[in-house]
Length: 66
Picture 1: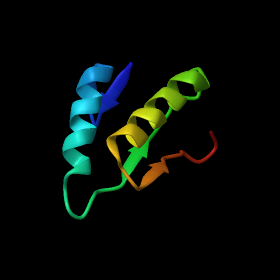
Picture 2: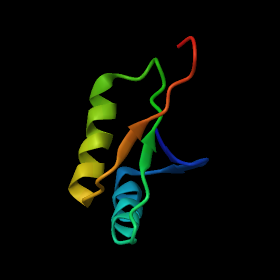
Picture 3: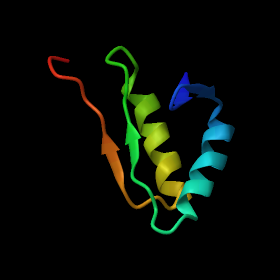
């Protein structure tokens, strides 16, 4: 399951939102927070979508102790 902020989105919705953000000047930084139980494959697919959209700044959100 993918969320954009607090809203659940499909991969197609994510790609549309990423394209919108990529067109902004300056581009915002996109942050990924992966649940510790999620398979890394899903994180990689999300990272690939960010890259395909042309987003230049990607960061990861971590929580202390996790």
